[in-house]
Image 1 (tube, rainbow, N blue to C red):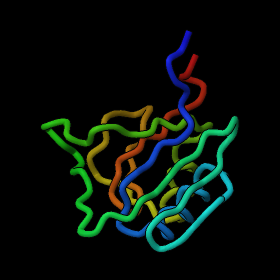
Image 2 (cartoon, helix red, strand yellow):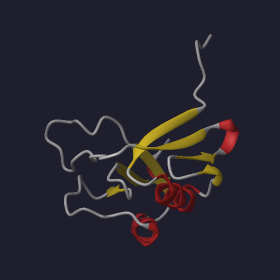
Image 3 (cartoon, rainbow, N blue to C red):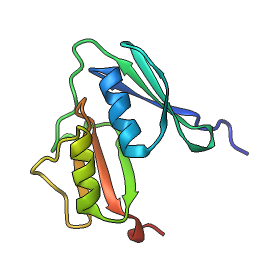
Image 4 (cartoon, one colour):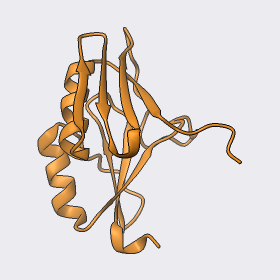
Length: 123
């Protein structure tokens, strides 16, 4: 029996409104709430993504030899290049440092790394 169930993940943000628009475009989730200090996206199954403004936010570095990125999203896609281009169009950055051929690491507008991987590779 589970002790808890995941309902929301909250990311620190340098601009909650901008990041809500970005993640809404990438995930296709509705923006349920938005203000300067905080935004929330409503996802499937009652899971939400929160974005909280942190003054003087410093994004984790990429690449990061010390592993201090803390965590990141792995997002399954059918076409890496097309998905990466759409994310960049929505506001992401595609850094030069990439870990391999079947993944693309991107940075969201607040600098959080996230990965795209081909959905066919997930079992």
